[in-house]
Image 1: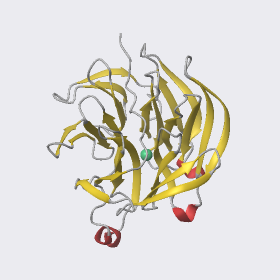
Image 2: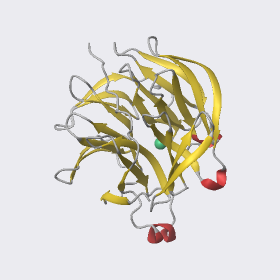
Image 3: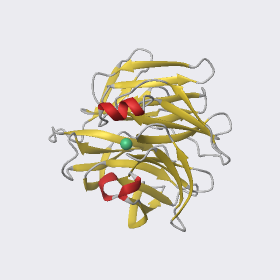
Image 4: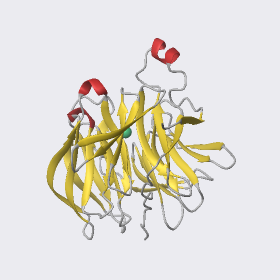
Length: 293
Ligand code: CA
């Protein structure tokens, strides 16, 4: 059975967006509502953080240095050491009630990130792509809570989650152009199990989906549309996961405290922590942002 260990007792408000730095062997992750980017070093077991003073939906490591971050006032390059921010673009200058949510790099090094209304009520969010020349395109509209990106190991499919739909959808993916088409629903999560939030993919093309209000990560086969494995996490709101470790066989899982009652926080005191579990399969690498100008 998969043994789950707590690696950072961070008590994050909304821990999210884990990214594995395969060169430094560090785990980056964010606390969206805590306005912090975190970095955990599994060797020293030290977790350090930088306050970015804005809601930070997602980050990715930039190949040529710094991080790219989706803050509530747009895309920035962020230097983790100094906290210095360099503005790139704000595609939603007019949508003051929105913030960025999950984001990730595609295998070609573009940075994808989606938005949501802060109160998550209406489908006023969208999905954007930052190309390697720093141009920003809107790719999807009418999204309520943009979440869970993953690309298949053959790069031909992109998986996506708009959480309130309870669905994981697949698009055909054009890696060269960074374009999606031919949307189809591959998984529908029963609401009593929780709601699909962030996800990652392993080298066999199976999806590992974090369940908000579900205390688990579920491994799904998107081809047969069957669940294959369940990892129980001692937190109710499980938000995202990524593979790390030198062999990419350690799944790091983020969680949140927001939305929980006093009672739930008492019964799940580790909520908001970062967890790790050894897996029998290897994951895929966290792609880096290849933007330069
Ligand atoms: Ca999320």
